[in-house]
Image (cartoon, rainbow, N blue to C red; front, side):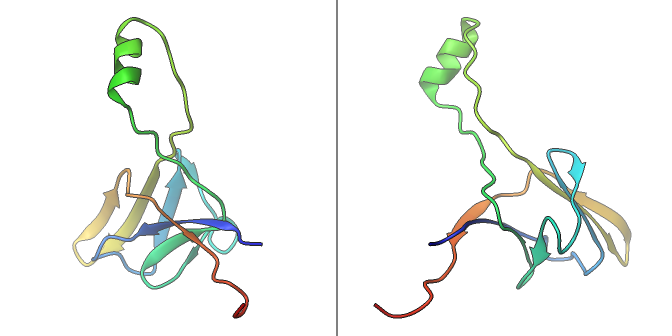
Length: 101
């Protein structure tokens, strides 16, 4: 059985000292996420909502369609000071199979 994972690439100039937020809530390293190969990895599925033309049209008429829309923000230190990156792109992966079949 595989577990869905969400992966967020860190900005190029981000170092080891990070503050990671999901939907404006501070996440705890090694509890909520871990860093692997300059990316933040969540062992849960985060989703971003894409607004289709049809859903936009319904919204224009006051009909709401709500779906999960997670945002990942990162605050980090650089030589030039504190920086932040907002609404980073989320990609998805599945755990690798445990063996050959």
